[in-house]
Image 1 (cartoon, rainbow, N blue to C red):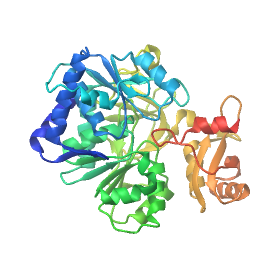
Image 2 (image 1 turned 90 degrees about the horizontal axis):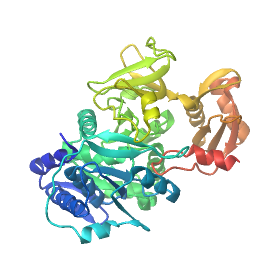
Image 3 (image 1 turned 60 degrees about the vertical axis):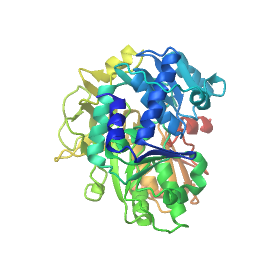
Length: 464
C-alpha cells in the first residue's frame, strides 16, 4: 500500500467526514482526495517525475496535507520542513535534496497560494518507492534526511493506529508542526480511524486551551512544552472539555508533569510512546500504563523486535542497560547521501538507535537516555534524563534542561524556578546524592526548537 491509498480508502469509507481543519476552513475526506489529485496534476505540469523531491514548508495549512497526498500520487518524494527553519539550514536542505519544486515563499520557490491559483483539475498517478525525506533538526550539525519508503511509512501508521485507536468522532488537535513526523503522521492516523485533524500553530499559544475546548478536541498529541502550557492555562480556565487522550513522544513528559496533567484533566488518559525518525515508533504504552510501570515507554510495536545490547553487540539480561536496537518492517532505508552513517546505524535490517535503555522481565522498554547524554560526574555514571527528572521533582521547579559535557566543558543544568541556586542544588543532593550535583544556572525560560523540544545547543551557546 502507498501513502495516498490510506487517504483514498478514507475518502470511500468516510467521504463526508471532515478530514482536516485549519484557520481558514475544512475539507471532507472526499474533498481532500480531490485536492490531492489536483496537486498531482500541478506537480506533473512542472515536470515532477517519480523519485523527484518536493520541498514544502510545513505550515499548519490543510493545503500542505493535500500536497503530500499529491506527491504520493505523482510518485514524488515529499520533503516537509518546519516553517521556523533558519535560512542557512533551509539552504543546506535544498542543496542536499535537490528538489524539482520548492513550495516555501520568502524568496524560495512557490507559495501555497501560487500552487492553488494554478491547480489543474486532473489526476496524475505514478509510482515511486520513497514517500518522504524527513530531515533531522540539525541543532548540532547539518540536517540529514532519513529516507522513508512507502512500505515502512504505511506499516508504521497502521501499527501505531492499532495501539492509539483513533475513531470516528475523534477530533485530534495538532499544535505540532507538519515538518515534525509526530505532527505529520497525525494525518494518516486520522484517516485510518476516520477522525478529524485540526491544525494549529504558535499563533494560538496564548489561547491554546481555549482553542482546544472550542474545537471540541478529544485527542491532543503533546511534547513537554505544550503539556506545560496546557497545565498552566488550565489553572485559570477550569471549563470541562472533551479531551479523552493525551499522547506523548519526542521529548518525554516528566513524572511531575504527567501528574499535573492528570490533575488538571482528570477524565483524560495519557499514552506514552518512544520512537525516533529512523523507525518512526519503537514502543507504545497502554493508556495510563505508566501508573503500574513508572518510567516505562511500553512494549514494542507488533512484528517488532527490540534488543538491548552491550558495546560488543551481545544481548544483555533484563534490567541491564545497553543500546536499544530495533528490527521490524518500519525500520527506514537509511540516510540520504550518507553511506557511512547509514552503514553504522542500519545493520542487516536492524537499527542501532544510539539510545540507552533496558527491558524488564515482561518485555516493557525503559528509556535511560541518549548515548551522548550519558556521562560520568565525579566518577559516577549518570545521564541528562536522570538529572532532569530529579530537578523537575523539586517543588517550585517549572522546567529544567541539562547540557551534557562537551569539548572539555563540564555539564550544567538550566532551571526555570524562583528558588535559589543552592536550593536547587540541595534538592538534587537529596534526590541523587552529592556525587551527582552539578552546576546550576537559573534562566527565565528554556529555548525551544521548531518541534517544541528544548534546544540544548542554544543553551550551550548562551553559556559562552
